[in-house]
Amino acid sequence: MVARLHAKGANAVPLWLRHARRSDDPEAALLQVAVDLGSPLCDGLGDGVSLAGFDEPSAALDIAYRILQGARQRTTRTEYISCPSCGRTLFDLEETTARIKAKTEHLKGVKIAVMGCIVNGPGEMADADFGYVGSGLGKVNLFYGKSLVKRNIPSENALENLISLIKEKGKWVNP
Image 1: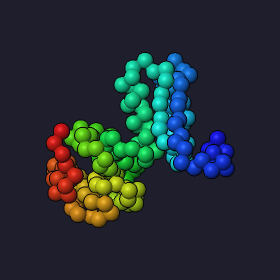
Image 2: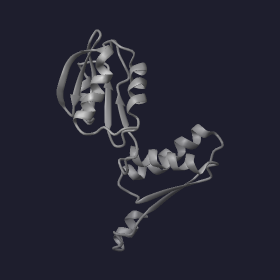
Image 3: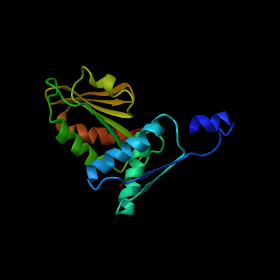
């Protein structure tokens, strides 16, 4: 359809993507809408989205915003980047990420990476605004963008140091 519009010279015609729920299983419905809307949005196709067939309008709105953020079309919440964990990770990655999220999830548009090790972490978090990267047993390095700004912080002080860094860089707002 988009190719036909372009061939007719209608390049500026807005394209609205609509998804009608086809499954009673909430997880299946979520996957369907993510694929149906997320794929074209990631390809640069689509100017708006709408969802039909969801019981709660607020749930449909939340899903739509999540898809738009995942496709890098609209940022409405904090984004977290995290590695899956490996033998080099010397802290509980899930627990640490949950603690960081609890303190920072109100920071709209901020990207925070939580990485388990100093080997792959800096490369994998290169797209983040702030990085929390394990650097040894009980130690964490903090990054602003790709720059290392604090090295070998004791784990028990790292979250407070991350919040201080976010404040120092002007990205903090009170919840």
